[in-house]
Each structure stands twice: as structure tokens, then as C-alpha cells.
Amino acid sequence: MKDIMFAMGITFLGVSSAYAIPYDPQVSIADIVEDHGSSVVNIVVRSKAKVLGESSFGFHPLFGMMQRSPRRIPSSKGEGSGVIFDKSGLIITNSHVVDEADDILVVLSDGRKYNAVIKSKEKSQDIAILKIEDSEFKKDLSKDYVAKLGDSSELRVGEWVLAIGSPFSLEKTVTAGIVSAKGRSIHVDEKTQFNNLIQTDASINPGNSGGPLMNLKGEVVAINTAVNRQGQGLGFAIPINLVKRMIHDVNEFGEIKKSWLGVSVSNITQNMMPYLGVDSPNGVVIEKVVENTPAQKAGLLSGDVILSVNGSTVDNVAVLISKIQEIAIGDIAKFKIVRKSKTMFVEATMAEKGQTLSKAIGPSINSFGVKLKELNTSDRNSLKLATNTKGVVIDEVQIKSKAYQLGLRKNDVLIQFNRSKVNSVAQAHELMDKSNKNKLLAIVIRDGYLSYLEYVNQTNS
Image (cartoon, rainbow, N blue to C red; front, top):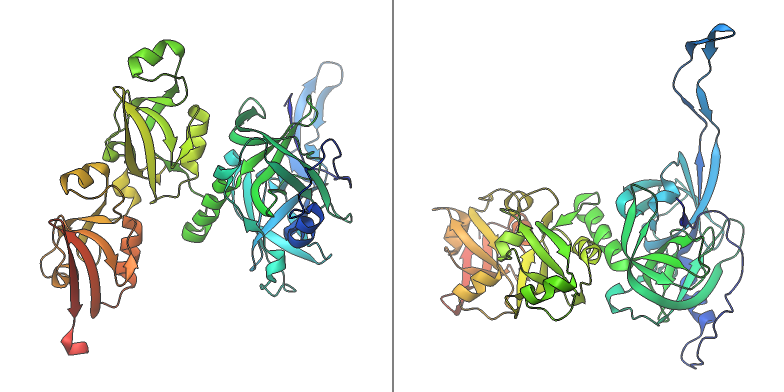
């Protein structure tokens, strides 16, 4: 680890004076810290002494047979920061803050101390989600202690941000600076690289790891993770949109999962531009599309150039990989691509990494008696639907099933079920599983017209 150092340790009180915030009577850093700083916590981790291996014997050339003592790792203590994002006591921090922890103590801004456990973590993204588990904790924090999560895709280079940390037994540390760059990649060691990070010159001191990077609205837009030891004023933070995706996974699946598109891609060189039909090296080119994946289902092809994902520019492979991870499994992503010099848009539904789309969305025929598939660009064209139409396609219906009794038929586009809008197959499965089978309502698009379907079991009404 030559260049990058994680911001973990003891934080020192202070406000960066390298820059003067432009005067704005509507913006007060003191007010932002006072109103939103209570969501920042200090995290104290303790690791117990460990013994690696057992005693063994070896031959010494002078002293003959000798007993070798096992290697002992002494107990240790470390500190970092975190952000409360749910009143039940859920906290975002860095994975590296708690990786070796045997005990985790969370210290709130008012001095209250609680034990916590790791609910889920993703080391490759340096994110961990903690949960306060303490008999003294009532699991109902006031809104003053819960952070507002912003939208990192809206961050602009040059925008002012605040880094906040809360070291143990010291008051909150606040530093101010600007967003210096977006989409940065850093090598932590030979095996670890973090991509699509936000670079800031707001001072990130030891102890700030896991703490928030806030905009001037008091919204958390990133989670501080590392500093560059060889360059003053270079700090890096994880975009909050990626963190929000991970929070969704923990709520939905109980753990953090990885999304995938199902393509092999490479960066664009100057020599490739004329053949790809693009006038700049920005974007990535698809080299291969894996069979039975979201990419293939969406109609993406080898040679397509991906320019953006959900409106966010894709400058290189590292950015694309991180942008994919911001999209939850089962959610639809809109890709702007260039194919043979023609710009077009393609939508793909994310699957879990390593799985085909069919495996990611569950069984072919659900208990309701229907097989569903995601609505993609090809379906919209063949069914003559508007480009912004959302819903799922009825791919198969079992005779005498509840779906058939309701009136669902092959090639119907289901847009509402029991008064809930349908946006994905996973959501549709959930709505059907939880429905009252004796009274059902659905809205579908059939042959270009809206159809209202209703089923009531008279014997149970």
C-alpha cells in the first residue's frame, strides 16, 4: 500500500481554511453541522489477541531440535466514523473499519454508547452496514439522528462539500472543500482497487473513514474512505447512490448482492473511433455479450458503444462497472448507446452477478399460474408501445389458474396489479404472492388498448 491510506485512527478537531466558502446568506456551515451532524457516530472496534498456528518442532544447525512458538497477534483497538440512516439503529461505515473487529462500540453525538454488530458488508466496495444491538437501545431514534441521503449523480465538479468525522471522546470534526473530480480509481494494494470514487480536497483526516461527505443541503452524497499520503488535499469517497443500492439489498435480501449486465467491455482508443462511429474516446465498447443475461435480453450487441447509464456519463470501464452496481437486482437500467454511428436507447433489467436472468427472477411459472418476463425495447417495438411504458409481459398462462381466471393472456402487458404499479418481474411476483386470491384487479395493455380485469370469488364474498 504505497500511495493510499485509509482514514482510520484519531481525528483532530479543526475546520479547513484553505478555501473560503463564497458568502451566501442562505447557507451556513454551522447550521448544516448543527442540523445534520447528529447523524454522525464514532465507531470503536476492538480485536482480541490471536494465536496463529500451533507449537511445532524444527532443527537448528547449532542447537538441534527446538520448539517453535506460535505467532501471536496482540489485541488492538481502532476507530472510525459512521452515519445513521435508519431510526432503528442501522449505520453505514467502511468495511475496513470493522473487518477485524471482535467487538464494536458505537458512540452517538450526544455521548450515548451502544454495542453493534455487522449486518452485512462488501469488502470489494469498502462498505459495511452495522446494526445497534444493545439491551439499552430502544430502536427508535429521533429524526435528528437520521441522515438525509442525497443523489451522488447530481454532484458537479467544483461543488462545495463538507467532510464530518466524530472521533471518540472528541467533538465533531468538520472540514470544507470542493468536489475535485468524479469517477476516480485508486489502487489500495496489489489485489484491491476501488472505482468511480469522488475526489475531494476537503481534508479527510485519520478517523474520518466511514463518515459522511455532505453537500450544502445537508445531504450525504458520499462516504469517506481513503486519503492519498503523497498528495496533500486528496481524499476519496464512495458515491452514496452505490450505498443506497446496498441498503436496498440488505432490506430486500438480508445481504449485499452484486448486479451484472452480462458483457465484456473495453475502453475506446483513438484508433477505434472511426470503426465504432463515435467522435470521442468517451464510453466503452462491448466486446462480448454473454448468453441468457440482461444484456442479451435487452438486445445489446458486440460493437455497441455504451455512452451513459440512467443519464450518467460512462467515461471508462471502471465507471461502467460501478454504475451497474448502483442498480438493484430486478430494476431497469436505461443505456444510451451508439450502434453503427446511430445513437439509440436500450433498457435492461439487472440480474444477480453470475446468474442468468431467468434464475434471478425465480421460477418460470409462479404460484399464481403465470410466467412473466421483463418489458424490453424489442417488446415495445413489436407491441407498438410508447418508449416510457413500464410493466411486465405475460409470457405464459396456465389454464384454470388464478391468472387465467382473472383474464390474463399471453402477450398482455401488465402495468397495474391490485392498484399497485408494476415496474419489474420481481415486484409483480411479490404482489401476486401477497394478494387476496378471492378478489383481484389488473390493468393490462392488450393489442394497443387498456383492458381492466377483475376477478371475485363469489363463494367467498
